[in-house]
Image (cartoon, rainbow, N blue to C red; front, side, top):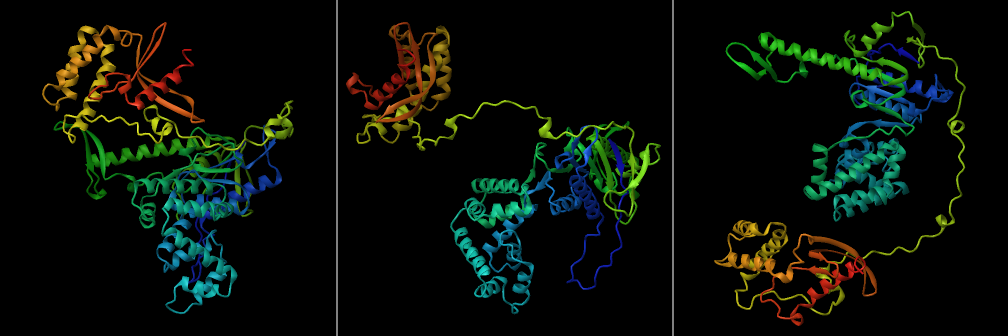
Length: 607
């Protein structure tokens, strides 16, 4: 491999026109020129089948990694240059959601639908991939309209004579009707999918636009659930507090990757472009207003914060803190240079740009240039993208030529079995699954005409106060019957009293003692010994499928107490009806059905 250093490109003196209405040519900007050089070099490699030394295969777009210090105009210029040359590019690794051009087009559409007199938003929508109106047509609509006429009025006027513009007006009217009645997510989802905007945007902006649109819809759905309703509030939140999207770079996709050096830690690529923006490693503007410091003086020792003052009134402590911050920033700057250089497996190209002033001697480009240009292994070569300047290549390792092997030729042949015929058979018709059935409410589905819900109201106590106390009392008894069997018998009373003191603090007089004695009587009854033995289990979750009314239904529930002995399986479900049924005939049918479902689910396990 080799390391190549391109000369840093500075700003050119461009005379801007006096007429402010004429467009300004920004193609001479240093960042744009470097982006063009990088894109041209990549295009030449891919077109002529450049070989990777030592690997014996041709270079692909996925082998190239472009690293920058920060995301500035160079990243956008490079992406645009690569797309213009039909070279696949993954785009930026991190970007602001409202800053992406696809989202900005959707925002402009929303602004126009809210305010049809918004000429700027309508012009952006017309020129976007949404409608792709030609620039000449837009100039005719906007420039030739009478004074005081809005752009939408001019569009409607010209639509009477132009079929294409009539289709645009019809689509805008349909969207205006939809947005008045639909939620934000539903509207934008329909616009992107049903009306083909996603397909148009990905065709114009590349595959990464699809990921951005997915994030946009996710943001729509999240705001619809948590934010204020309406399109206007949504657009305000998106523009002022839109999220930043971090995209994971897929190394398996054949695309040029562009990212910051910090984000590239742990990654490698055969070819790496390290682009230096020419800015100084550190500026006093980077210093915080409150600078941390540690005092070791005689008056006071410890850590504190110092207000950063101007240099003309700074004292020794503040100057020392500034110098220390500058040293730390320089160290981090050089560490990032090391990270960027070591990402390259075969080739490293160091290039950069700067403003009208020459860059400082501490930039990435300057550090690498000083180290390599004077080395005996360095040679001057023609620039791969332009004949105006030369580049320096540092090449130490001379690898022997390797025979070219394609990916298909290198892959060993594998015998595979033929695909099964069942793979091509039509799928069975879709059967909608019924919702899961709860045993406690199964009676409403099995016997819909019969009201089986038990009446738990007391015939004696007040109807308004009883239901609340009955629920609280039932929950407390249920909890005691669940937990006390796991406690030693001599400690159960104390544990139950402590629990009821909290759970039954507001109960009527005497109710806590009644509940305690009732629970202890059940636990001490010899007839229930097997139910509350150490081998029994509480709160047993159960799930299965049973045929109910001719349909297979999923059933899930929870058994309050399950005891399994050699000769029988006992299923217990706690109920606190007052008064309690005297015999089986008085038990509400819903309770009987619930236990019957539990028994049917357990029967295959214990035949």
